[in-house]
Length: 102
Image (cartoon, rainbow, N blue to C red; front, top):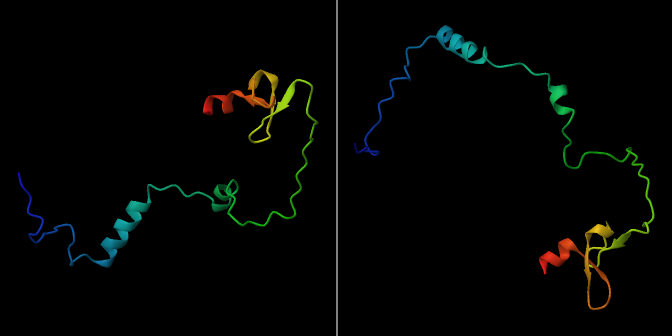
């Protein structure tokens, strides 16, 4: 069946003779099924961009490169020797990820 989208539409849902009391009761009936969530609880895990974190302190223990690790040629990340794929022409280590990309 074809639909004529240019034809005027008759919307029977919108009636002008609704009283204010009926409209208020519809509004309260629609919101009765919603759950009231405490705003502070939902906002705890959200960090806004540009938020002030200057008073925060980060403590990380940094270890020097170990005997069984190597530094990647392309991005200088440190990997375990199990990730070593080969060495390039200059004898520098190439990891599996870089070797598969080239």
